[in-house]
Length: 356
Image (tube, rainbow, N blue to C red):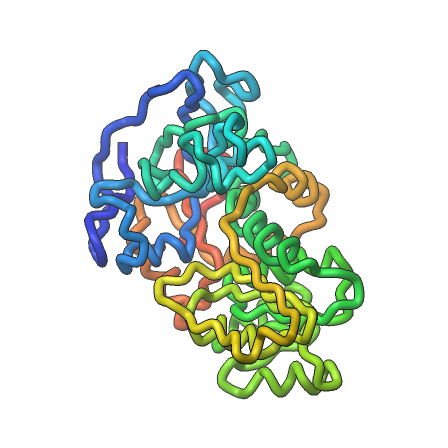
């Protein structure tokens, strides 16, 4: 089969790789119908995630059809259409028993495209299939459902829920990329008074408005002052950092009000300064986190009912073999306007593919 293989920083290719097989009784083999590219994949290609070994197939999000299961798999069977979660869960360790699947100590957590071969291939082996794949509602096509593998659970859990968004809040989302836009969409479920999006790219700020932002701000034009003006000088109740660079994290801490929350979602490749000399007196809560995906079943039901604007985030689609071109389009989002790039296998009917 073919897969997209990481060969070291700046080096990757779509090439022949061995077909996956059942290694444990809890495994499932899924034929991939749709995958997407994540900002974390770009971090890997830059060398920001040194645990990823050269030779690893990238990708941690997919929709497909189960073609084989191990003897201990009970919740799915061959022929089922499923979402492959970005996080695998053994279901037995102390963390999994409390729903913290991202911290699984039984061999799960974020392993696909990280510690083992991932989803950007024609087939993928999914460990711990009972908790790591989710049956796909018939009303969702693969192009929509693949966004429930990572970005919507990440935005909802690590951003909105960790940030304790409440009715009447002022919520600022720093970074209007895919996760930031999903944070805007899911924050709206809690009826905040206003949502403000901050970004550098006009196209992403326009997308933020379409997804429900009440106001937008160019990150280069003192957004802290806009937030102060909107809140009588207090600052935002919740700031969701969805970029992952020191400047945006530090900006987020400057925009939060006393007693507020900064929910860091962005993946950081470099240290950021924590200005405790300013923050210690403000009762500010700062949270970080890897997604657990324990909300995925709920989000799937909401998407199937039309309550989540999943389709609105897909701007480009490609056939699977154009993986390199898709990566280029996604990496140059400021020029291409890309939000989410979805790739599908041309021979499968579950994805209607068009070339961007």
